[in-house]
Amino acid sequence: MDQPLAGSALRRAVRQYLEDLARSGVEHLPCAGPTASARPIGPAPPGDADQPPSGADVLAPPTAPIHAPDQHAGAQAAGSQPVRFDRPARSAASPSDAAAATGGRRPGRAAKEAQLNVLAQQVCACTLCPELVASRSRTVFGVGNPNARLCFFGEAPGADEDRQGEPFVGRAGQLLTKIIEACGWKRSDVYIMNVLKCRPPENRNPLPPEVDNCRQYFERQFEILRPEYIVCVGTVPAQALLETTESVGKMRGRFFPYRDSKVLVTYHPSYLLRNPAAKKYVWEDMQLLLKDMGLPVPGRSTG
Image (cartoon, rainbow, N blue to C red; front, side):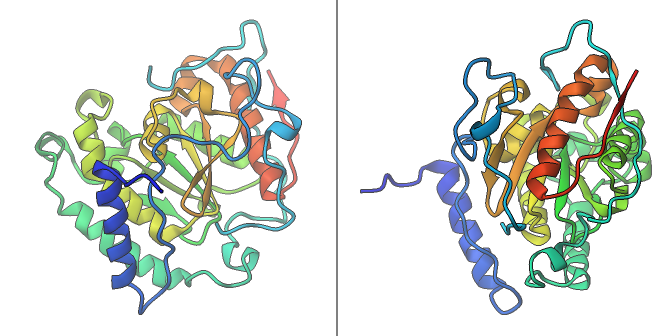
């Protein structure tokens, strides 16, 4: 007999079910309970858990697309040359063409934008975290193509994001843009969002109650977006989404399931700014992502 769901897992499963029923006249959203722990798709890599798996240890790339956050701590490559993320020639295959890649079964962009706008207004009016509400300049909801196949999921807004109301626009955001472009995309091809929608004071780590308060918002975002792939950049988004306590170093290099999406975990750009040698690990993760998406892997330069 199946074990009964407990605590937050049961509440979230029931809430998901009720939300699906409420929206049944507009679109069908699959109801899937939350993952109690981070379980990779396919077996875990043997040996050192901080190293990427190889060969059969990673789920083989599909022949067709599927429907489907120690702050950023991890291993460094001592003495290795840092990766420079240079923008290659524009790839013919873009992650933004989700409708074409999935046979046109996804809701239209206009419908998604309308739902996201309603949710963004709810976020603007949110007062669940008094400390964050008192210190924020504006909320930071998300930006990009709502029909993108790929979503980058970060931790929380910083000072620049708090002023501009857009995620990843500071130094770390500029590096994320370079990573996106190094993969052959434009920033507008993907969707970018954070766990928290308000900046924590002094850029401290999000507190567990703050993550819990924002969970209803980022989970609803993912319900609307329904990306095929999610890249969690850093410890906070990875642990929040996958409900685990594992480190980035132990999770990177393989895919995890979240509803109908495939989740890849990698280091946060701010960690790379402090530890440039770790860029090579992020590039390995991006190569894995591109191959699984069925897209060409551009060359990279080092220096």
